[in-house]
Length: 195
Image 1 (cartoon, helix red, strand yellow):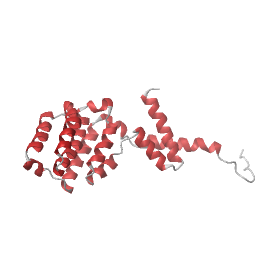
Image 2: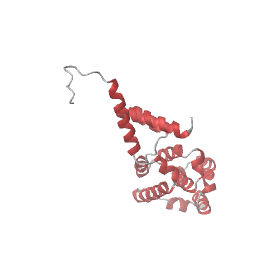
Image 3: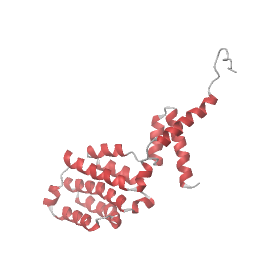
Image 4: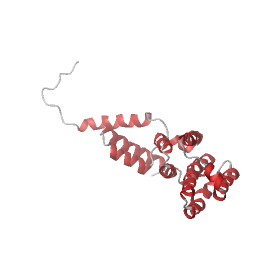
């Protein structure tokens, strides 16, 4: 089964679960199968400063070929850099250096401004004043969120996953209509047909 057919089948199962009001099962399927990218959810994670959750959620959608686009690499760098800075501020330099090598440097290969991003990481790692200049308050999170949303809407891989819910609503209606034939028959007198 190709990826498109698999996605369509999963969307139909998801629509069925939603039409039956099985929301927890539908949400679990949505997250596990990565059916659509819920950017309002990531928006809330960023506003709350939950960088680890935002980075893990976004990374789950960018595995495989989608992570090679410049916009995807910039998006991942944006979130991973915040997590890296938070670890350095905590004083966990050993973990931060491992994280830099394993998770940040691999996304710099296609970053649109690779040199500036690498210099930013090196400056924060070497200089305590540069680290202290990295703010994590509401205004800084708002700016990061704005940049994150801009990167999402520039990335075609994300736009496929963040399409509007018209297709999903159509599938939900089709799922609920298809189940009506299995509903219990009505009791009482049958209605007379107009003719």
